Each structure stands twice: as C-alpha cells, then as structure tokens.
Image (cartoon, rainbow, N blue to C red):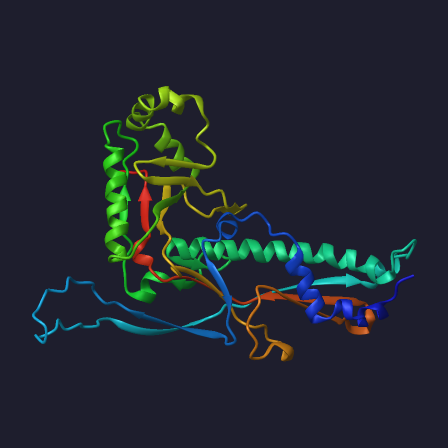
Length: 335
C-alpha cells in the first residue's frame, strides 16, 4: 500500500513533474493550435523590445562617385516588458494515496502518478486557457488579467499607436462588402510599411460571421460562383474567403463571455516573421535561476503534519504583438 514516502522518488522531482505536464495534450485553443505566436524561452524576468520605425523610400540614381542618398532613422524605442506570473496549487491528500494498492505489474509509484496526472491535467488546462486569453488579447491590442478589466499590456500605448477600424455596415443591404474587404486589405498593407505578407485573415465573432455570409451582396456574388455552391454548404465552420480576405469564427471564451465581443473582429496579416511572439521567463525556483524559461513548471512538497502533498504549477509568459498598427478592428455596425 502506498505511503507518502514515495514522493521522494525521482518521478516526483521538479524536472519529471514539469515534463509530465508538458506531455499532457493541449486543451483546444484556437490561436495556440494555429501556431500564430512564435514561442521561445528567456533567462530573465524582463525582456527588452527595440522598435526602430524607419520609413522606406525610393533611392534615386546617381553617377558613380556622386552624392549618395542619406538614410535617416526615426522613432527608435527600447521598451522593457516584464513577464506575468501565473501560479496555481493543487493537493494530493494522504487519504487519496492511502487507498492505492499495487497489483500485477503496476508499482505504487505508477499508481500514484495516475492521481497526480489527473491534478496536472486540470492545472495545465487552466494555464492553456489563460495563455489563449492573453494571446487573443495581444491580437486585439490589449492583454487583460483574469478579472477582465486589469490591463497587463496595452500594445497601442506601448508602441504609440491608435487602432484603426473598418465598419462593414452589414445591416444595410446596399453596402459594398467587396469594397470594404479591399479597404481592409489596403489598411493592413499600408500599416506594414512595405513588409511582405501572405494574406489577410480576420478572427470574428459568430454574430459578425453570420451577418457577413447572409449579406445580400455576398450571397449574390456566390450565386454566380460555382452554380450557387454558397447556398448548399455550411459556412459556419472553417475559413470563408471573400475578395481575398479570409474570415474565421473565433470560438474561444469562458462562462463570463466570448473573447471576441458580438459583431466585432480583428484582421491581421499572416507571413510576417515574429509579429506575434510569446516569451517564457524562468520560474522562481533556485533550480531555474538564469535558465531559459519553459511554458510550464510543477513542483511538490509535503504539507504541514504530513497531511498530503501540495503541488505548485506556474507559467511566466509575455505575449506580444510587435506590429499592433497592422491589426485592424472590424465591426458589423455602421460608422
């Protein structure tokens, strides 16, 4: 019969427990699963972001040995950004361990690991959901704490920009939705300042999406395309491309509400290297000082009076959108 002594086994060390939580499958998180954010570890609690806004310009021809075109750098900024600390605790009580019996080829350690894994699954699910919430916040331009009001990072204040909005006016049947999409793409391209991109994608609420695909001009366009295929298919899932812009319903949220509000959406370019970034700082343990941060950490220790084992998990992320001006807000409403 298992006792608390088994927690001295290497299977319950910081490294093994951390690897165990990493191996648990990710909770379905739309942006996290898409890999939109590049992820890496840093060995400090703060990262420095340097943004140098230099305008691109044409270089005029000149005779060899002539006066070259001068290049002027503008708006150089060096900004410190601190990682947030996301701690959690869970416990394995002595009574839970007391009921474990080893049988067959299963050892006591293996049996107790199953109890621990159940706790880790819940802890990881919470961290995955929180990181998704922060990523969608970075995409929208403002990362909020779990209370939904405390601002952790404001991308526009950070870099000195204001967010642009395209109003699609989808309640008006005569709205030229094609032109709205063209305007949206142009705004993204101008904001990128000459950087190359693959395409423009838009994460939208279900209500925005429904109004878009039901709009008169959209339905008319697809009635002439592929013999009315638009009327025979379900547009509520997957990608919906219209005039070169890819719309996708974002389904993330909690019981407190959806992460993207009703009738809104956010357009962003794809294929821009390092535009969206996630950096992980190290945990506040002696063993992890000055090491590159990991997405998750788990450690355990005995409770007072040996009532059980307490597990402590944490993640220390920084979620950034380094080009917030290239994310355009869209609204189903009129301006």
